[in-house]
Image 1 (cartoon, one colour):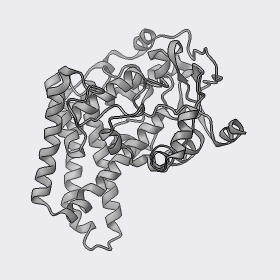
Image 2: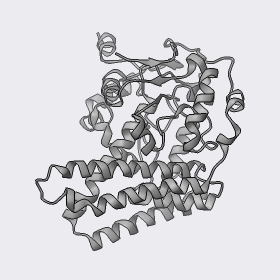
Image 3: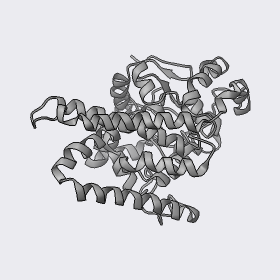
Length: 365
């Protein structure tokens, strides 16, 4: 049973506004001013915390992986991959300029956080910026935009598309997304600085820096570490990291009550109101830097660092009222439910919500 709060009950139609009396300026006005303050020192403490934990896990690896049959190996893989995801979130702040007020520092720390995760910082920053500027637009979004019905049928007919977009296999789609160039559901090749689908000419040199950083990192790994050890100690945890990234971002933007827009009905503010807040439990929320607090983040993504998002959200919720979406379900059950329920959207309407498998059967009969 879906327990997402909020009453965005939009029909599939051509007109809808979840909060006609609100604006971004009104939202900003109720947030305490100190929530907009960025602290390089505080951000760096979170960076060092993540790096220290990952370093400690690698130091303790022989205790977990003392034999090929050790059941603790699975636990170690998952812990390293999860804290890789936490490190990514610090780089996420760098990409938005909320790590500090210094652009050069944000650029350098972003590469320190993202390069070991094989994520080209400038490429990710470019596609993620386009996602934020077009969030929940059916055609223009760059992250988990919904599939129109005809496209959904095409994806279901193609084995790879079905696995990596329409089933639980979507947890592993992130590295494919980073490398893909063609198609309406990718942003461009994040490793290719000359990919003009993704990068402006002014971004070529910064993007090249990110790609060279990753190539140098991989070259060092393969030079000093044998391939089997790398597979076990690095690439398997990498897949866990990628799964966490896909899981969290999917749940941010995919929900039965979410509303998605086309053409004149889309506005930046309405798109931000269709993102979903959730908790992953107090411990996980703290460790991955409250990334589940997402509605306010999408409204003011260049202004509020992650450590102020919960306070900012508490200030905004009374103003948003029923327009605020929060999913109280356990995140595992929410993911399992949404993969089966959020399948496709109407092909032409300007305001749409996800349809499910039963609706698909009705549509085709």
